[in-house]
Length: 503
Image (cartoon, rainbow, N blue to C red; front, side):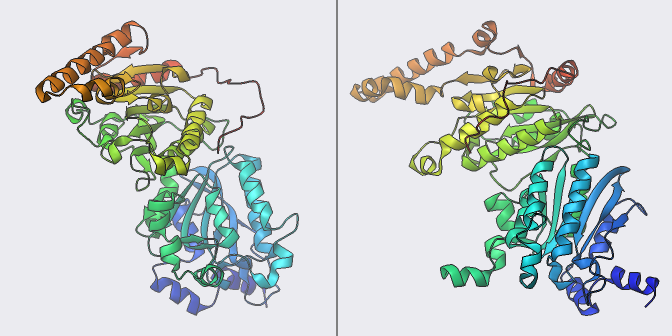
């Protein structure tokens, strides 16, 4: 067989019947995924002849190499599910390790196009336990984390130990109906626990993007997942030493004031405020469907990349829960790693209380979020949109956490708790002792007015709790100017190796 024939067989992947089966499910061939993602004719492949002497294992089931996306260098790997369901052999593992090492060494993003049934049990001694075994993939990913962007598009299964490749990425885009992540198959789960389930119910795209939070983007098809990869990388530098790429400034829609109700009890969609604050069309929301009481994502202000963390009262009143604390923690760390300034839009009653959340460890998860806020040294701005009560103020980068500025809108209130809760906490016995209903209501109203006067915004500004008060429609200009002034700030934090995070 000539070299051309060998290369042709490698490029073709697995048998035609596997290609046909994938096509019926809306799945592309691994090499076609790469071609659609990267710039034309930019892909340079490594290890194409891996396992070339074996029968039916072209490229050993994974395509690896380097390319450019929008003119910027990246490294990437793509499982070929037409070759033994994209399973891992010893050379598969070695190829994956090598390409991550190259991405880390050269300081370029690493892209994972995942569609794999996991390890080949028949080859376990060769691929699993050794120094260059499967565990080295995850070790290398962790070493690269925060040094280079790592993004995963998941097109099919990511099974057993292989599920940790997406888990160690910054974000994961999952194709609805095809993508899944699980540590044990449905058959294994039934054998071990007796539970009868399906891969979709246990680890499908909706489960991980709406319930577990392991997935970040739910995509209708493969092209949409590839677009997420391209879009995500457009907001980040190639590595931790560089600045996020600026773009041509665009105007904002404006009209923020009309969106914010005066009454703190009326819910509104903070995402709409974000979209009118930033350059039009620039908001990339992350984990839109999980822990929706908190909105996070990248955007641009006057062409400059920023990270947005915003409470959304439309969901659970904007109260912080275990999941939303975790959601914020990871995003803040992501932005801090890659030099992305942070803007916090606070409208938060505080952290959730009650026996259920205490059992879930709300104190520990809240402490983790507050740790991340404290450790973030990028420029950060706390904007109090309406209320910032209790530890919610701390979790949204309040004055005690070294924000570059605390900015209040005229609707802002900062307090240990809301007036109604405060009056009840202080005067509960006295209120209960007033028999006349009218007299009781008047007493409560008077005490509430006293409390509101105590936390008056002008008083807070006069005592330098907030740095400035701006009208909603002036907020964008204020932030643009302050971001420019904070550029190049000293980012030292503490004399240590690392903190002990309350995970």
